[in-house]
Length: 247
Image 1 (cartoon, rainbow, N blue to C red):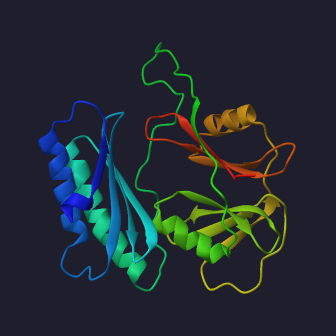
Image 2 (cartoon, helix red, strand yellow):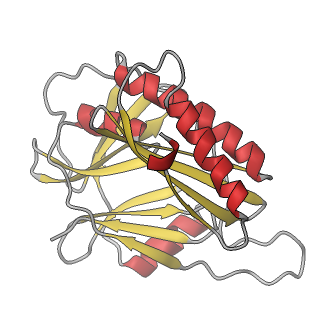
């Protein structure tokens, strides 16, 4: 499987290191007991504050998954991401259950200083994503969020025909928030609670100020004119990303 694994990495990594990453990830995907078809393995290695981020995307029996882990050294990050890959493959091919929480990648609040007198680094939105939002139940959105290792997942809620998110609360719970206030959408089979409030309508600059000021890991808000849902989130590099549904 090694030749079917693609690697994208930061400059300066020798070829033998890339080959090792390819071999280790392929071995994890083909480990005894996996017993399922794992395809389209893609590895990303990125330099982040304090170390290396390793991310793996794959398809397991046609279902997309993602795992990522950061560590001080490349070897440790590969150890963590391959362990996570084996666990995620088992999780998506078995009976679904909420995965452990809190999030495993805490980060210092962006825009803060470490030493007295040190200049505050300006926080910027450096990546915009515009996916086509999937119409699905909150339960299906929660499963996608877990499979893709997201902290929050933006989708379209059929009950209200508006944009919504699910995110993790507590050790095993989920929360549903919509752009408009609405009651629960019928019977649920998973531990999802409902936010009674609609998403705040904010400009991008206002959303950045609120996220940074409150030291939030992410923020769900609505465009002030269109009312479409948007998600602002922290990246490993300390900057921010913005997700908006494709029009």
